[in-house]
Length: 87
Image (cartoon, rainbow, N blue to C red; front, side):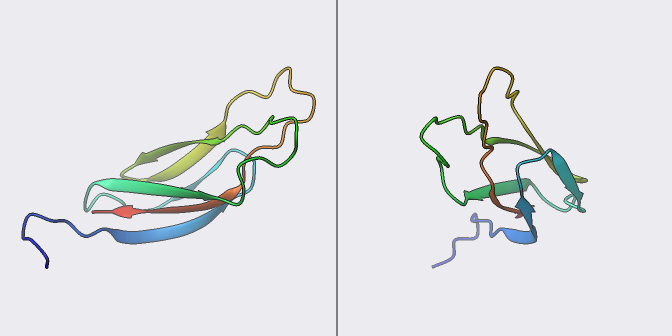
C-alpha cells in the first residue's frame, strides 16, 4: 500500500567508479538527491589498504574522490557501481 506521505525515488543515472576521482553531470534539481554505492568487493587483498570512495552529490551532479593513500604500500581503492537520483 502506498501512503500519500511516501516518496518514490527516481534513478537519474548509473555510473562506474573505477578507483580514480571523477564526476558526472546530471540535473538533480527536481527533488532531493540521493546516491547508493554498490562495491564490487570490500577488500581486494590481505593488506586491507582499500580506501572507499567519498561521494558528493549536488543538484548539478555527483562526484567522488578517495582519501589520501600516502603511506600505503599497495593501495587498492574500492571500485563499484554508483546509482544516483532524486526522490
